[in-house]
Image 1: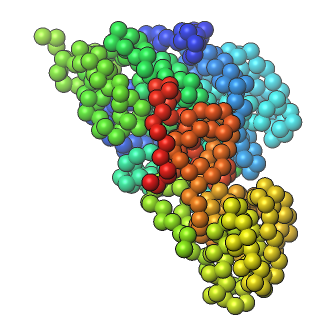
Image 2 (image 1 turned 90 degrees about the vertical axis):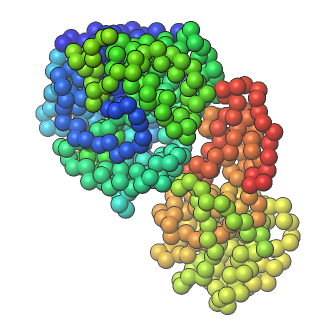
Image 3 (image 1 turned 135 degrees about the horizontal axis):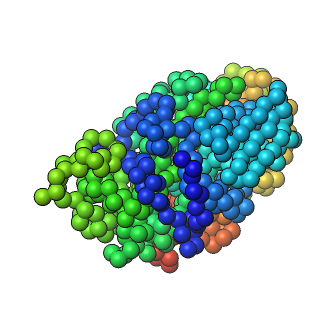
Length: 354
Length: 202
C-alpha cells in the first residue's frame, strides 16, 4: 500500500494520532493475560502481510514526523548520537544493511544504486538524493551511523562483541525509555542493564547474552518490550526527565484514555558482516488506551496484565502512582470473557456477545 | 583504619579490593588523602617495592598528615600535588611513556580512583588489570544526567547540582568512561517536594 505520511508532533501540542490501519497493526506486546520478564526471542524473518514484522525495517505513517522530532532532539543535545572511534566500520555496516533492506523492501520509496564503491541513495519521502563513496566518511554530511539513522525510525544501539560480552559502543538514541546513551556508552551488557530490577536474579541477562552472542549474519532475531508513557512523547530521556516527569501528574480520569499510551519497543538484532558488531534497533510504537480499546481482546487483556503486574515492575516502569486510575479506566473494557492466545487482534473470532 | 565496606549493589557499581604487590619492574601508584595508608601498609609487605615505584599523591584535606610518612618509604619518585586536575597531565604522560608490564595501583576516594582509571583506560590499560583499594571519604563524583555537570565529593542524598541547581538523587549506576555516578532529578514529578538530605550510607 501507499503510506500516507502524517504531519504531527510528539511534544508541545501532541498532535500524534494513529490511523485505524496503524491501530490494527500495533504490536500489542502481551501474548497472554499476564506478564513477567522472559527471553522472548524469535527469528526476525518477516511476518503476516502488513504487520510490523513483515519488513526488516518497518516504515509507517509516522516516519516523516518521527525523523523531524529526532532532528530536533539532536539539535538540542548532540550527545544523543555517539560512536566510539573503533565503531566507524560498524556504522558503515549498518548503513549498508539499512539501505539494502529498505531499497529491497520498499522499492517505491527508497533506491540504492551501487557501482563499486560509488553509491547513490535516494530517499523519496525525505527528499534525499545523495551520491557518496562507500567507506569514505568525508563524502557524507555525517558519520555513516548518524547519516542513515537520521533517516530510519527507531533508536539504534550498536554493540561491539569481545571478551564474550557485548559493549554499548555506539548509538543513536532519541526515543528511549528513560536511559542515557551518554552515560551508558562503553558499558558491557550487564553494566548497562544494572538498574533493571529482578531480571538479574532471574538469570535473564545471562541467557539473553548467550543468545545474542550467537546471532548469525542473515538470521536476525526480535522481541517486544513495553512500558507506559503519558502523552505521545518519544523523547522520554533521563536528560529531559526534569521537564517531562511532571506530565505524569497531569493524568486524570477524564483524559486517561487519550493521554495514557502503551509504549512498545520492537527490538531486533542483526549481526553486521565486516565488524562482527551486533546492531540493536529499538523501534518505538505508541498507542493511546482509547486506540487499544477498539480491539476488544486487547481491552480485556491489558486490564488483566496491568492489574496483576508485580509492584516492583510497575514502579520500575514508572506508572505505580497512576495504576489505580488506569485500572478504573481499563476495567470497563474487561467483560471477563476468555482471550485467545497470541498478540494479534483476532477481531473475526471474538467471543459471542451475551 | 579508614576502610569502608560498601554494601552489595548493582553490577555497574565498582567494587574495590586490597592492594597487593605484584611482580614487575615498574609500579605506578595514584592516591589521595587516606589512600596513603594503603601505600604505607603495602610497603610493609614488600621491602623492594617502593624503590621501583612512582607515587602520585594528592593529600586533599589531610594536609601534611601522610606526606612525611610517604617521604620515609624510600619511594623512587614521589609527587605530592594540590589536586587531581593539577596532577593529571603528569599522570597521562607517565601512562603514555609506560612500558608493557607497568603495575598500576589506585587508592583513596572513588572519585580519584575513577578518574585515574579513566586515564589509564585511555592509555590502553584494561580496567580489569588495575588494582584498587578504597580508603577515606565515601564522597562520590556525580554526573547530573540533565546538564552533564560533575559535582565532586557528594556525601549527601539528595544534593543540589553545583552547575544547574536541580535537586538530584544519588544512584549506584556508574560510568567508567565518565568516572562518575549518575544523579537524577528527585522532584521532577512533584516540583519542590524534596526530602531532607541524609548522609550516604547512614
